[in-house]
Image (cartoon, rainbow, N blue to C red; front, side, top):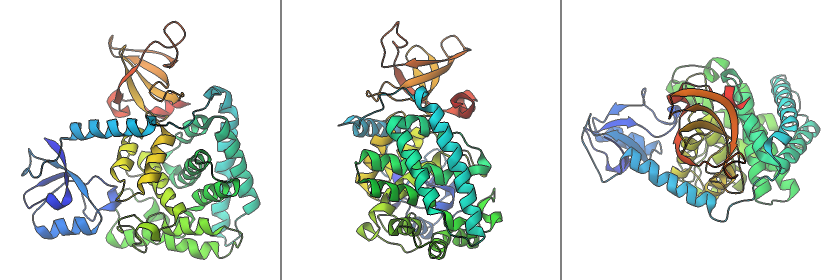
Length: 404
């Protein structure tokens, strides 16, 4: 049986099924490992690994932790409660009406980030006027219907990760800032910081950034330096707001002190960086990378929820869950009718999003793509409901082909 237990409850003889963290967030070669000594457990604690998944069929059982299925159900219940208690306003303009503008914003953002990275490599200043114009365009689209831009942000290739990740974090932070009703200047500074938070990676060798295998300890140390490299880059662009520098330096810091590069704790981490940490991890987890496929949106939210109070500021993690919703755009779901589909838009009722169906599991065959608005009654495009989450791998379908 796979179950979740606290790292401090482990003992030699336990088989770790998964370290419950990113591939490069633990010091071991593989994601599975038999615990042979207390020294190994201490290394895990030193790396900030609070919980792991163990396989009791392959090793000893410990603790009173729930099974993986029980833990997932409890987490999903908590996520639903967070998102639906005093829910944030949802878009009233249909997603398809905002799609044309959102596509233009995405296209322009890709060109801007590409050119910005080239300028940085050549030692040129960041074009701040263009950056703020980009933020303005993003904000207008998000204000109109934030699902459209988030929908398009999921369409990306593995070799576009660094560029698209920067854009996506900017979009996620601008969405949070807009819903938090921050002042316009603060919203734009936060979004700009999201766009720039990983600029230090232009100084990291390409063979490390794109390595398809696990990084060596020395390579991982070099990768971690990208946060520090940002300081030198920003020194040439005095117009960059201080919040953006804090976000670049501190977005890998963690509330419990387990992050890098300084090991800061709690309030020693800037508010902007605490918000960035949540958006950065969510987007990194859900993106396809050169060395692994991304997790589903709901698994990304489960990870964020699991890190509340340890890795992430609880308030911002909960607010992020509210902003993303119970069924984020790109989530695969099963409907009561047996239809399988992917979420392509949200409604004021977060439990009744718009779903694009592609398969009828009750009959065992594909169906023509069509959108079902679960907020509408039977006979008006609705009349169904979600009964469970599904995964892209199970249905052997590329979600990006369904989102285009």
